[in-house]
Length: 408
Image (cartoon, rainbow, N blue to C red; front, side, top):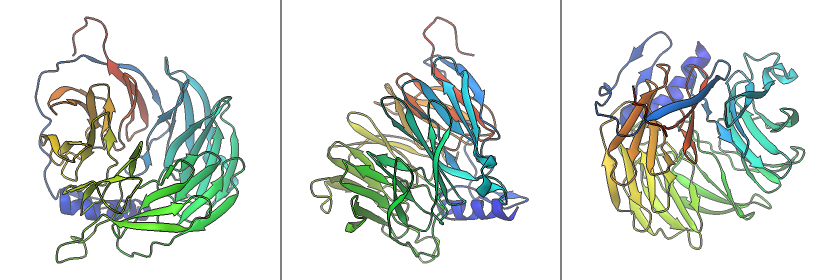
């Protein structure tokens, strides 16, 4: 119970200020009451194309284990170390690997997989990357389900690894960034040390760009820019702006992963600002707007979608940062980060509902409850199919119906 309590407190202390629930081991106290499920008539028909079990899921822990895919397979994992590959067409299970069987996890409660999944698709296979709170990084052959290498960082890892060419980048919960060789997992360099004692237990993954630099957020509200070759800090950009009279209200972590689109960079802080930057001159923002979030934004050709700490969903125009629309009908429903799927923005909530919002207006177009265990990580969109994992470990492939059947 102590481990569960630690997860909940670190993750939810900051969220309580902005409207999430603060939970203990044996009871839960609602800081703000979620609004009821919005009532509206579905305007598009949705179906679960297939679903499969992914072990025990993440339960009540805050392990950000989103699914990932390549051209043929969908990958998903459980906190306890079960890793699966499924056929994208019909959900048939292709292989299963149990990382809890590795020797380093014998004296642990479990493998405690918390960071992942990341996929590097190669010509002959895919490299599937995961990381754990026990400090291990794992690389798995995507075609065979065999462990290729593992590396012990000595640091707790909560976020998904990132890969760029022949290097894998991993950010620890203490703000140390590691560069590993993608072929054998050997360490190339390590840099940074986030010494903040009071911070959100967050999910900001590093973002490498064009073999040149790595972007990652810090607990003191900054965006670090590090040279990929040597791990040298090149620049820091202030994003979070602390305010308030208490340490809790002054939290300003950059927990959402930066988003890079061509030569544009977008970054948002918990208690600060949403900035649009140019990679050519990131020290001078193209625009700055007042939004707060710990969820990684999503984007399409023209807009950036964000979910704030109150469960409100926004679309911001990329060119000037002006607000295209807002949807505030999911207040305090612990809404996930967004995903663009065709002409829709898709989000989930704590009761296991998926919502399709019109990407042009923000209006609801459909909702579908998968199961009541809840959805914690953002949906993942692959063309017309959305993949989502629920807390109890069910993986769903959801898409718009193409026939004339009516929606239940």
